[in-house]
Image 1: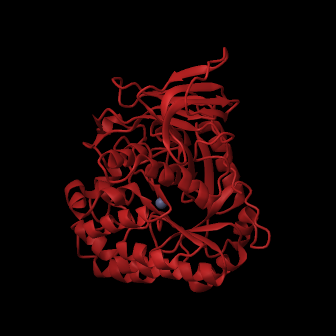
Image 2: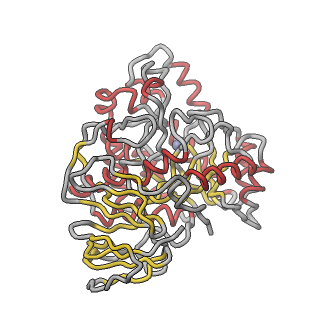
Length: 456
Ligand SMILES: [Zn+2]
């Protein structure tokens, strides 16, 4: 479904400037951007008054775990995409560690069907690598000579154990995959051997500070270097997911070249060791939240362009599952509905500019994954938009969330930049008012809006 819509008098965040004006979407695509305003509504158009709001391209989150199929108590494609829409995100890329794991095309085709009937935003899906599924990977993404991605955004390799049982860490298996597949490989870079020996070493510790000490920077750096070496040896595109350490960021600044991209999670730009002490297992994730100096370095390397995009790694677990405490609590936290407001809050607090946030959360993911016609306000691009309020600040609590797990790691944070409208292909899918409920209102039924993303 596509729509016709006119946004009037909004501060439009265009690729090179921010200017007040009007934007028209016809049949789902951005038709006219009028920097001086003055577009006259047509009879069939929905008109949105953008006065006092900033108009951004819909954000794209290329790293979520929507748990569908397998863990409906944590999330599914309906609840996850609603949470995304409430946060101004109009497209997501979902990771393969579902039940069953998405390690072959038939499982992915089932996910496409689920998304078509449940998601309200655009969607894309990773295929997961195992030591033995090379043929399935090739079927899903093609070969280096003939890449053919069947709607699959890339291959995800867990080089170190995390949540779920997908793991490829032996050199010969990694080489096979890098040598014989097309498209892009996204790696969770933690070194499995070092990880296992350290987990044994730290088994007597039950204080949460042990988490970052155990899964240390060296674990991450070893795997990042190893994956980068494979990318160069086999001339393969590589994306290193959730960069967490200043050391890795510095190393990539001088070694990433043209083949390698990387991302940082909002939580690693926001939290450090003292927050982990304070908020406990809610902030438990892999790789861990690290130290103030890592956080500062990640900001520096984001600003200088070493880091290509900002993501969430939205990985919800129920509070009941978390309640067993460290070290038994599962790693991962929700975030898809707070990422854009949180980054805009950082912008309004002077950490960066609103245009930076658009570059990192809208445009960046389209460049990394070669997503067509999205991520910028450009005539001819898709009509995926969000109108955010940068004038009001509101305090978020667990009760304000759409994620099925019903909590947020940012509970108690005062946020600005809440989306008043989120629009997919010219159709409003979620709305809020400045004084209405924090959660706002869903405007479409499951499956009514959103399509499978296309990757060049
Ligand atoms: Zn993840």
